[in-house]
Length: 167
Image (tube, rainbow, N blue to C red; front, side, top):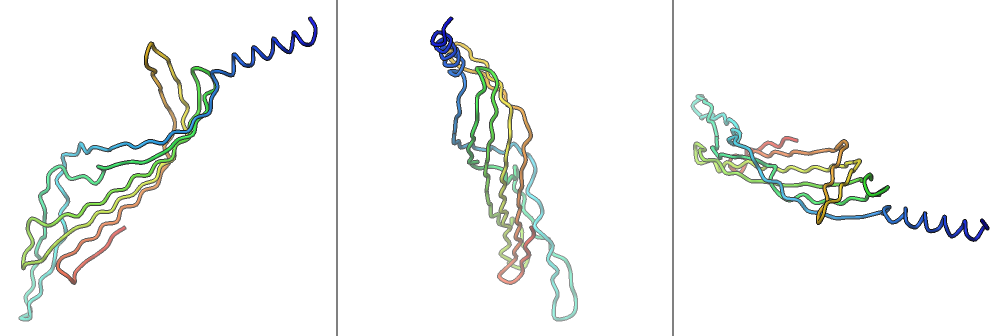
């Protein structure tokens, strides 16, 4: 065989094999639904001190059922490379943030008690992907670690003067 025939044969083989290889970029939005059945946590306890010298604690509470700060939209994007028709790798980066303000069901002494929850998280996910093409759809299995950081800021406030912030 001469060199031109071999070069043509290799070019056809590489082109045929390279059709299954691809680089892709995708952006996505997901919505998190809460499946929690927990009641909201108790707000806090206020110590009431009278000028006469007596004091007693007063609980400020709420009874919101199905309390969750993990509901809302998650935004992300991924970059991947498909080695062949079956195996590939993907790296994703996601952001999730939500905040809620809850007013107390019971607050003694006319305190306007509120609790503010501010939750944010960032996740990175290096994944190995396996894809199986079917007639009009594909089954894609992704496996790998999820590495992330999260922040929860909780502000408790009773009235205009008493508040605490936790992070």
